Structures are given as structure tokens and as C-alpha cells.
Image (tube, rainbow, N blue to C red; front, top):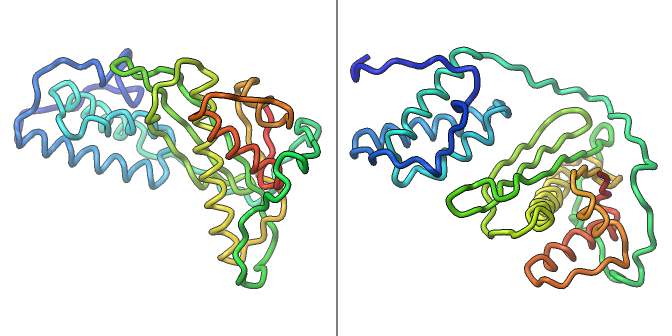
Length: 257
């Protein structure tokens, strides 16, 4: 009210066709830029506290905190209006294990490829507390979604049993020329997150004795991960390639489309 602003009507987190990276409106002055950064910080906490449905949009806007423009501030107002229209959503923390068809996952002998590989497990684990949990992950990438530099966006959603506990959306640091490459990088990020989470939960006394189920929507990535005889030559992709093939070999994860 002090600035004479009003909230627009909003049915989605961002207005239709919005591309923050393509905005060419004037840059904000210092006062409005600080306000813009305040709103982005607030929205980041909103997604951290459970508004998973805005994770991608907040990540896109966070990329413009250094030099926000008038169009970015208008979109932030649009996001605030969306929060006002849809003030409450519920995350269901279901303790039951989901029903997973084990036949979706291939089983192979990895001994000749990663003979000495093993999952890192704390040596001073506390005694198990309560029941064993299962971990499930969905991973994907929006290939070349950023119009200004053609970097892809990674998305990861992790469940314990049926409870969503971790969500992630971030622009990738490299430009991938194919959908396969962007999905490959996304898988590497997901595996690293799972690796750290399994380690942390075990230090809390939470038993995890089964592989984490990862679901990926790219058939080529699934085959390169699951089949021991698949090969890959590009160096930066090969690092990710061996990272999660080794995780499959030690039984830390298993992957299905």
C-alpha cells in the first residue's frame, strides 16, 4: 500500500509464458532490488518448509538476485498472489512402505567391473532404532530450458517410505548438447544426495539395508546405468557414469524407468 502496488490475479506460481532469463525490463534501483531479494529469500524458506509445488519457480527467480529487473519484481508479486490464493497445502507423511514391483529392476554381476567397491558405512553406528525404512527417488532434467545459456534444470524428489523428505531444483553448471547428457548429470546429483542421506540416517540409528529405488524417465540413462557392459567416453559424463554405476554395483541404489 505504501508503494501503491496491488497483487495481480494468480492461478499458477509464475504467469503464463514467463521466462525470467529473457526479461529485458529496466534494472531496479537499490531500494527495490533489496526488496526483491527479501522476497526471494522469503520464498526460498516457503519451499524449504513444504511448498514443493513452487520449488522450480523459486529456483528460477533466485538466479536473478544479483541484478533484478522490474519484470522480476512483478513476477515475485505474482508468486505472492499465488500463495495468497492457495494458502494451504498438505504433505502426507505415510509410514507404510510403497508397493514396488521388483521385476522392474535388473540384477547383474558387477564383480569384474567394480571389484573393490563398497558403500561407505559409519564404523561407530548406534544400535538400530525402531523399524527399517525404504528410500525412493524420482529424478529428471528439463533439457536446455534456460533460453539465455541453454543450461538444463535438475529436479530431484526423495521419499522415505511414502513420505516426501527432500526436494531439489537447480540449474546445472554445464551446457549439455543432448537430453541424455542433462539426465545423466541429474542422476549424478541424485546419487550424491542419496549417498549422503543414507549415511546421515544410519548415524541417527535408522536402519537402511535395501537399495534406494531410483526412477528416471530416460531409457538410455537407465540402460547405461544398469548394464555392466555399457560404455561411455565423454570425460565429464564418464565421471557421473562411474559414480552411479558403482553405486548400483555395491547395492546402494537400483534404477528403473
